[in-house]
Image (tube, rainbow, N blue to C red):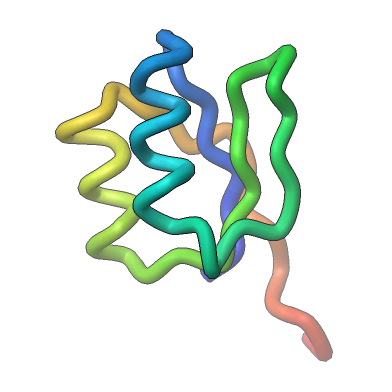
Length: 63
């Protein structure tokens, strides 16, 4: 699932970015947001442990 997740602190942004480095599509440092092809459990981890908020869900390619 491709989503954009925004974080509240640079520390949370950096820690989650290092956790999903192989799945990151784009990074916006100014907005503290990461677009990644993450599994649902990683998305839940971003929200529960890093205070992330899903700001956009991207449609599946080819749909």
